[in-house]
Length: 380
Image (cartoon, rainbow, N blue to C red; front, side, top):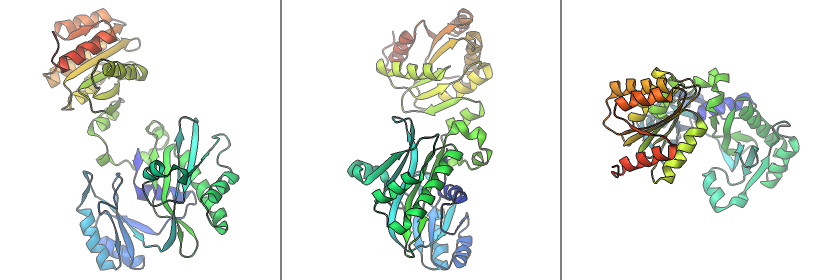
């Protein structure tokens, strides 16, 4: 789950990371009032969960309260990469001398978090990594020990930070680390972290991504979720406890078990097709849950066939079959359905589906081949 800039910076601030004074609003008239409170000169920033806000005109400097209102009116009427701007952040304008990048994410290869810093802050860090990877300094953090002071100091030295700022940089780095770990984040970054004209560090921007699987521990973060930036199907899937991710292919997948779902997608690709989604209905899924999953798959206009791959252990195959038939009765699709059922009550499940004249298969490879064939118009 992605958090907006104002949400991320508010969390960082709780952990001791200095941020500019700012207020959020959905009304241009309030932007003028906030600008007056903040000294007149402010930055108006669109709050949307996409990159490139500045290039799209979603971040503008206002020199007067009147200009702040005018820019707020313009920005609140924008769409950036298809997302409407419903809220803006009015931050005090800050004079600074240097921009730095500081972030933490998971390094799956090293199996531990990695903190990164760069003197080339204020720009797309991915572009820096591509063009000048030597400008990004990395340190891996032992999750049992946490960020050590010497590690933060080593980062400060490596990016040529002035010595008087080493201590405050270590405090910012430690605060970012605590925000990252205590909120179960997969990414926490400040870009830019600036050196102000009065020689202090300040986080002008912030970004956090929280692990969806840990949200049950953070009801306060769940309330921050912005559904504008999320796929409708993924939102609907959460209501039924389904694990669903939209992809770009033409073969919809309904599978019970994450590993089996991954294997199903791999075999579809091996057979020359492309999966339209990842969908794990989980163990013990009843007819209602299966029907909901099928409705979600069929809501994707790209889907030209659906492949069911069910191993009936906890999930009984006859229950899955009834769920499929329930959904078919509701949705009335006009695309082919390929089913592979194996396990508990598989014979009963196949009998129910055979009566509905669905395409059946005994093995996953056979099912994938049949699904790809019907999509390509090669089915016999």
